[in-house]
View 1 (spheres, rainbow, N blue to C red):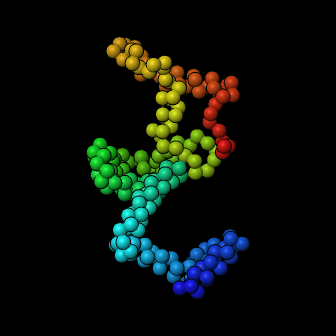
View 2: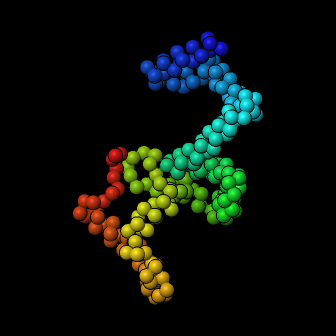
Length: 204
């Protein structure tokens, strides 16, 4: 075991010095054997072989990885990973007693799986960038559509005191609903014109 770890460590150092050998080193016997033993060790922890505390933490790590994969799917517009992550999130919603999320996320997953039959062509559109929004030239930095709406239209269409002051006035409320996206566009354009636009193509 010690020899195997040493060989894997040497392979890792070699890969750092020569990134072009990445695939060759990853497929080497030493790295493959060490990874197989590591996966077997994790499965034993999941079964509770080493006690409940390690079992709890490995389960927690598994849930975190689901969220990280979901975040990656959004940032890279990866539809397959997005759907797979959502399916893995469904049981968590039931476990955490989030009824609305559990109910509608299940329906949402079923709708995505049946997308090619219910809406031909929509799946291709999503794969070509329709799943998320790109607001920056930075790679793998896309955002979810609902979050983009909150950060743009909803943010710029805010009024002092919200809609509390006129939510009982139907004409005023309807006018606000119809024109808020236009007002948001004007605010965004004005911010860009005077140089106070928060959107940036450069990492902070």
